Image (cartoon, rainbow, N blue to C red; front, side, top):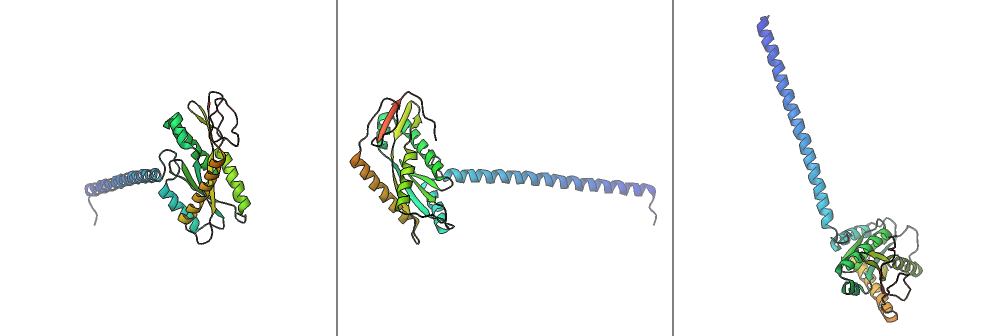
Length: 241
């Protein structure tokens, strides 16, 4: 049946209007979908940032105790053929830093020590356990040997790295650290290895206390092996390694 020309034209206009409405509706929902995706992405990013903040020590930005236990347990469960060594670090005579120079200087010492420990550890997990105590779980190269000589050399190298001069607001603080290392043996859990490293650190600290005494220096210079704590005012501040 032939439709009259006005009817055909009216149907054509109606179909165009319907298509336009449908296209407009489709575009509207596509815009809403893109907006929802952007909001969801922002929320996920904010959630990840919040979780990261919750897993960090607020002063040093190292891992906190809970997050270290979680990541350390994961690493010990799948070491991927690497040797793992627990390390515990404690700053010697740190209370004297706070007592003599104030907590602001003490915080600067903690932040710089944390930065150096993180740099030494690389991608391995390191944490501040509270106060002036830090821990890390170091992974050595696969096929390497972790014997007494390796432990002594690593302890000395790490202690030397952390004992270099620390620039602070009013000068330079020289501190030393006591380091304890404990290799992870098959079947050991994280808490047990941590206790062994902590015991090794206290043995090292006890030995140092019997053989050294803290001294204060008023002029710039290198940290002698027998010095425990020194304070330099003025002079050129050494750059961080």
